[in-house]
Amino acid sequence: MKKDEPILHVYLMPGMAANPSIFEYIELPANQFETHLLSWKIPLPNETLSAYAKRMLDEVNQENFALVGVSFGGVLVQEMAKLRKPKKLIIVSSVKCNEELPPHMRFAQKTGAYKVLPLGLLNYMHHIEKLPVGNFIKKRVQLYRQYLSVNEKVYLEWAIENMVCWNQTEIISNLIHIHGTADQVFPIKLIKDFIPLKDGTHIMILNKYRWFNKHLPSLLTVGKLAE
Image (cartoon, rainbow, N blue to C red):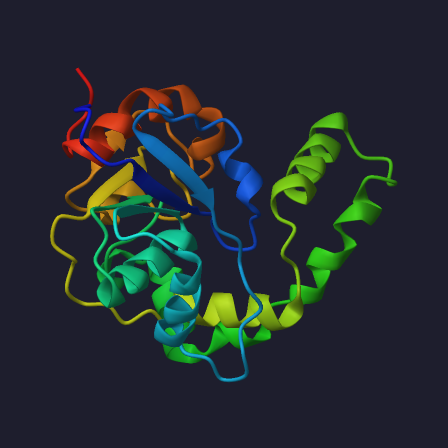
């Protein structure tokens, strides 16, 4: 980094219902970057995704900034980038257009099936820990409770609808897409023009953090993987 080159402010947006702690293992060189963790806001009545993105941009206080979004957070940062151009736009475990959505999501959009999901079940995860189930189930529930803490019904209904009904058809130019080869939420066979992360799952931002810590600095500066 050159001495006169300004610090790049990197805004990190978590996935649907997730809190910013999903980025707890991400470390960027302090002499090049300053990271900012974004959190989901409760949507206003009948708020569009674009209007929500505009409101989220109130948190971005610099001109020299980059956006990194995971899953539905990747969708949101794309909407933010339409309103205010970042130096770099990176999405992880996400989609770039509605054609990359899996068939069941596209079916839910056409039929309105997303409107009848049992959202209330998310409020009862803590009861599962008290049941006579195996340690694996209990640990998985604890993991969900730790990272998926945004469980307000009004937010979940809004988020699911805007994910399933996202109508983006044209891909934003210069967008960098990182996707795991083992992602079951957004299967890789539907994804085009991306950087593959071998055996990466939908939560690879947590368990493949060493890869991200190695390559994100280069991707954020020159747009290429580190050698």
